[in-house]
Image (cartoon, rainbow, N blue to C red; front, side, top):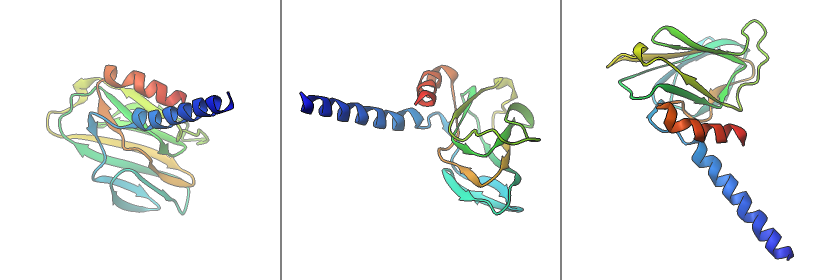
Length: 161
């Protein structure tokens, strides 16, 4: 009986462990290459995932351009910052946290941001994320754009675990 419980616990652990990899896997238009990130008063050209420590706390930004996409939802999983604003083609589509008092811990959550597809261009789109960095900077999983109905269940389960 003891071995059955141990086997059951092991199988349950492996199931949850591997499901987290599946649940967090980007799909659709994956925004992982050629990011411009500005922190420590310097621009950096990076690919995601990326993580580093900042020398001083303050505001910075992540910026990327991309082409046509079929999606209507931006997913930002595990962004390292204490507040952020998301602009798509110069239109504010979401703010998380407070820039005047940046204490929100937003890194451990996959942020699902629906937007009106009318703001997308056919050939050239720009995503800008203004962020308040305290100790670190980066995204542990690349952001992606996907159809809402394709990702909402998966990302909801991811946020539970």
